[in-house]
Image (cartoon, rainbow, N blue to C red; front, side, top):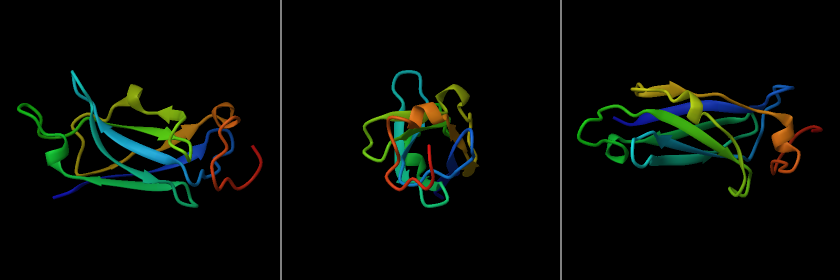
Length: 117
């Protein structure tokens, strides 16, 4: 059965949805974190990453320890992360919402931003 991470990315101060950002999901491990997949945020700031246990399982792990990183539209600039709030032993369906401070967006305007910064 596939695992799913669903969530939203919004500007922290206004709660405005951020469209066109790249969200990458990871499984936190001791030596090297596993990349699980990526998705773009839609007009409502929503994203969904779907992955299977093959992408994260090792000898002692049966459920992933999840976090996401949010990048600008080009994928070059890291805007935010939930790595300091890892979702340990995640369920098949998890929700992770990310709030990006306006100051982080000032130099990296999302591709389809709606409204002033």
